[in-house]
Amino acid sequence: MAFNKIERRAKIKRSIRRNISGTNTAPRLSVFRSNKGIYAQLIDDVNGKTLIAISSLDKEIAGKKVSKTETAKLVGVKVAQLAKEKNIETVVFDRNGYLYHGRVKALADSAREGGLKF
Image 1 (tube, helix red, strand yellow):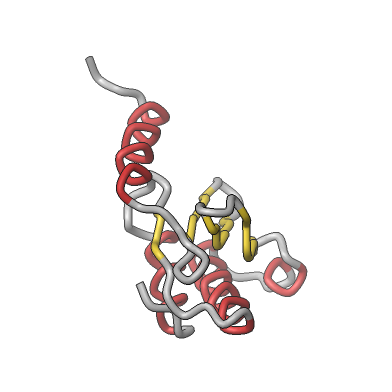
Image 2 (cartoon, one colour):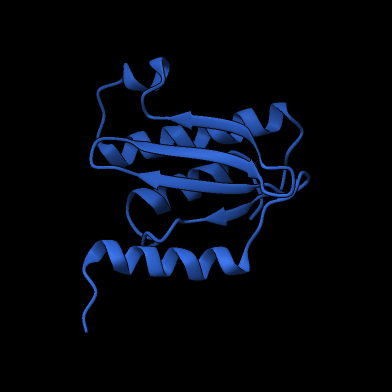
C-alpha cells in the first residue's frame, strides 16, 4: 500500500530519530520547513532542553525581501552565530524527514559556512 506524503515523511523521520540524538556538547540541529517559513532548533535530547531556536519569522530575517532559499541561508547563518555565542561547535543534523535538497540543504550549507561542524 502506498503512503501519502505525510505518512512517508513520518516514517522517514522515525527512522532518522532512531539513529541520532543530541547531547549537551553536540546538540541536534532540527529543521522544520513549512510553506512560508523555515525553523531551526538546537536540542539537547539528554536533558530535554531546547538550547537555541531561530526562524524566518525573526525581525531581522523577516524584514528582508528575498526568496525562500535565501531566507533559509540567513537562518543557517544566524543559528551558527548563536551557537558560537554559546560555545557550540559540533551538532548532529536532523533533516526531520525532509529531503536533503533545496531549503533544507541551503540552511545546512550556510550553517557549515558559519562554523558549525556536522
